[in-house]
Length: 485
Image 1 (tube, helix red, strand yellow):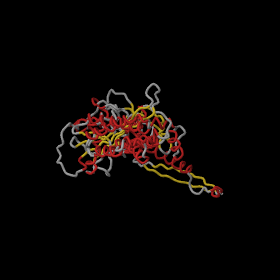
Image 2 (cartoon, helix red, strand yellow; image 1 turned 180 degrees about the horizontal axis):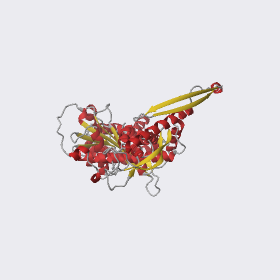
Image 3 (cartoon, helix red, strand yellow; image 1 turned 120 degrees about the horizontal axis):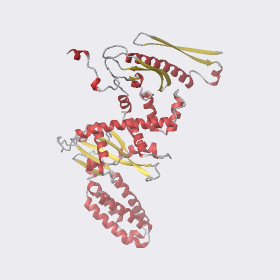
C-alpha cells in the first residue's frame, strides 16, 4: 500500500498574478517496518527544492517587470533579449528567465546600453545566504568536509565541491578585507595623537583600552620561502579582568602601518576616539613591538606576565629537586632556591633593576659551579641566561604587575592566547596537514574573525545591495519637479 502526500503552494505578486505549485511526496507502507517514519532528509530536500524553485522564479519575474519601467518617465523600456540565469540558493539551483532591458531612449538619448535586472539582486549567481553559509563552514572546517556537510543536508548540485567552497570563502574574505580597509581610513582620520583629557577616576577600570596581541605560525605552501609564516592575532577591548574581551582582528601583514590601522579600527568599534589610555600587552616579540610605537599617545607596552612566569617556572622546579635531593650542587649554592623566588617576587612588584642585579649574580654563580659536571647546573645556567637576556631586551615594558593586578587590570595576554587557539589553531595548525599561502590564510581569517565578532551577515548584506544601473552623472536626468523649477 502506498501513501501519497500533495502539497499545494499558492503565491500572489504585486501585480495580482497568482502562481500555483503542487509537490508530491510518495511514501510506502512497507518502509514503516524499516523505521522510516515521517519525512526523511531526502523528502525534505525534494519539498524545499520545489518550493524554492517556485518562489525564486516568481520573485525574479516580478522584479524584472518592475525594473522594466523607467523610474523617470514611467514608460516601458525596450527589450534587448531573453536568456536564462541559474540562481544558486541554499535549497538548490533554480533556472529563471533573465531579460535584458535597454536604457530609456527618452531619458538617455544617444546612449545604447542594456542591463540585466537579476544581476542587481544576485551579482554572484548565488544568494547572499548561500555565500554566507559556505564561507562560514569553509572558515570553520576543511573545505572538503564543508562541502560534504552542505551536500548532506541541503539539496545543492554536485558542482558544489570543495573548490567552490574555497573560492567563495576567499572571495568573501576579499570583500570583508576591502570593507575593513575603507573603514580603517576613516578611523585613521578620526584619531589624532593627543593627551588624555578625561577626568582621572580612581578605580575606573574601563578608562583603559587594552590590545592583547600575539602571533600564530602557519605552514607555508610556498617552497621558495620560509617553512612557516606568521599571522598576527589580537583582541581589543576595554575594562579589567573578568569583563568581555572585545573585538578580534587578524592580519597576515606584519607592517607597522597595517598593524596600527587594524588596531585603531578595532578600538574605534569599542568606543575609542583618540582620548584614553591604550595599553598593548604582548610576549615581547620583535614584530609585536612595532604596534605600540605607531599607536597614538599615550600608549604603554607591557610584557605578558605569563611568559615571564613560564621562564622562571622550570628554574624553580630544578632548584626544588636539587634542594630535596641534597645533592652536591646544593652545597655550592645553598641559597639558590631563595634567590630565584626573590627574583620572581621583585619582577612581580616592578623592581626591575634589583631583579636584574640578583639574576646576574645567580648566573655568575652557576657559571662557576658548572665544572662539577652536574647536568642540572648546566640547565639552570642556560635557563637563567635566557631569562636575563629576555628581561634586558624588554626592560622598558616591565611594570609593577602586582599593582595592576590589585587594581583589577589585565597583566597577561590570555585573551590573545585564546584567540590564537580559536581562530588559527583549530583551523590551520592543530591536526591539520594542509599548507597555506599568506593571501589565502589572511582572507580566510577575515571570514572567521567577522563570524566571531558577529558581523558577517550584516557586512555581506550591505555589499549585495545594488542601486540603479551605472550611468554617468552627466547623463542622469533630473526629477520632473527640478526640471520644472
